[in-house]
Length: 332
Length: 268
Image 1 (tube, each protein chain N blue to C red):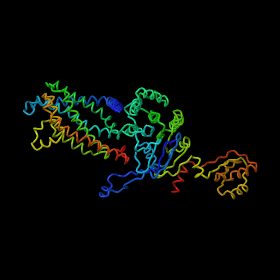
Image 2: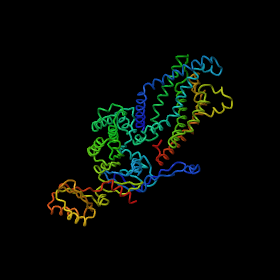
Image 3: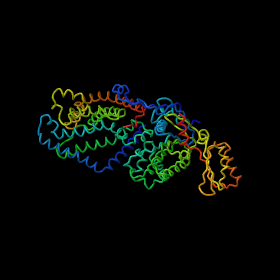
Image 4: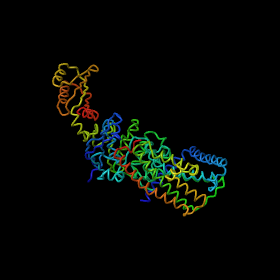
C-alpha cells in the first residue's frame, strides 16, 4: 500500500527575482534562501505526524509543498502515490489544509456562506454540500453561529470553521499548520480534543501537523520530525527520540528521616551530581541526575529505606521535546 | 467539464454579489454616480447643441452614453482579471481557494463574473437614463451588436489576462494597464469622435481595438447599420482577437508556472 506522504530529496530554494539587475544596482542581500534542503520523509496512512522546529525552519514550506501550493526546486513529493507537480489538482482532492490564518475566509460572508462557497469549488453536489455542512456545523458546535458573518467569530470559532472547511470533502489527509496558534489554552485544548476525536470519528485519517506547542505533539502524535534550517534532523516516535537524545533524567526524592550527613556524603561520593536540602525539620529533599538505565535510583532509595526513611515523593523529570530540539541544534 | 465550469462561475458570482450587496451604501452610491454622470452629459449636450460630427448619432448625449456604456464593458474585460488575482492575494483567501481542485484560470474567470454582471447593469443604466433625458431610439440588429460587443470585450479581456500575468509575477506595476487603459480613453472616441483629433493622432487611434468596437456599436445602435456596413470593424477586431487571445493564454500559463516554481503565487 502506498504511504500517505512520500518525500524524496525535497529541496526548495526561494530566489529573489532579477539577481543580475540587483547585482548591477548593488542592492545587497541574499539572492536565495534555502527553505528546505534534501528532506526525506514518509508518513504512513492513519498516522498522526508532528513537525516541529523554530520559526523559519521550513515547516510551512514543507506543508505547502505537500499541498501542491509550492513546487519543489529539486526532489519530489507524492501524496497517496500522486505527484504534487504533475497531478497537483488530483492531490488537492485528497488533502484538507488548516492554517492559523484568519484571513483565509471571506469576512463579510457568514460561516454557512463561506462553507457553501468552498464546497461548490470542490465540485460538491448542492444537496450533498448542504447536508455535509449541516453535519460539520453540528460536529464543531457552530450551528448557532452559522448565519453570523465570519468577522463576528471569536478566534477559537474561526479555527473550528477552518477545521470544518478542511473536512468538507472528508479528505484522507489533513495538514494542520499551527492550528492552535493564537488560541487561549482552553480553546487550544478543546481544539486538540476535536482533532483527536474527530480524526478517528470521521474515518481513519492521516494527519501531519506543525506546531510550536510541544505538549501538543507529545499528546497527539505517533511520530515527530524535527526540522532545523530546512533539514529534517530527526524523525521517530517521541519515546525513541527520548531514548536517543534524552539519556539523562533528573530525580527528586522527598523523604521523612533524620539528616544523616555521613550517609549522604557517602552517596555523593558515588553520585557526584547529588545534592540535598532540608526544607523543614525531619524532611530531606535529595536531587541528582542519572542515566535512565543506571542503578543509582535503586542505590539511593535502598540507602534511605535501610536507614528507616519514609519516602514521601519520588519524581523523575526526563528531557522533553524542547530539550531534545535544543540538543539537536547544539550538535550542528 | 462545462457543467463544472458553470458551477464554479456561479459560486463566485453568488459570493461576490453577496459581498457587494452587504455594502449597501456603496452599492447605492455607485448607481447614483452613474445617474449624475449622465445628467452632466445631458447639460453638456445642451451646451454643444448641433455639431456636424455628432449629428449622424443624434447628438452628443446618445454618442457619449453609448461610449460610456460600452467602455464600462471594455474596462471590466481589461481590469477585472488582474483585479481578481490581486484582491484574493490581498484578502488572504487565494491559498484557501487554490486548495480546492479549481484551475487558476477558472478562479480568475469566476472572480470576474460579478464585474461583468455589474458592467451590464451599468451599461443598461447609462442607456436607460440617457433615454429618459433625451430622445434616443436604439436601432439595428441586437444580435449583430452583441457579436461586436463580445468580440471587442474578448480583445480587451485577453489584454486583461496579459495584465493579470504581470500581477501574478510582479504583484504591482502593470504597464499594460496604464498604456492600453489611458490611451484607449484618450484616443478611442469615448467622449468625442475620433474625427475631432488631429490627423496624426487619428492614425494612432486606428491602432486601438476600442476605436473599432465603439465605431461599430454606434453605427449599429444609433444608425441601424447592417452587417455589410460594419464588416470591416468585425474583421479588424477578429484579427486583434486572433493574436491577443492565444498570446494572453500563453503569457498567463507561463506566469502561473513561474509563480508556482518560485513559490510567489500567494505573495503580494
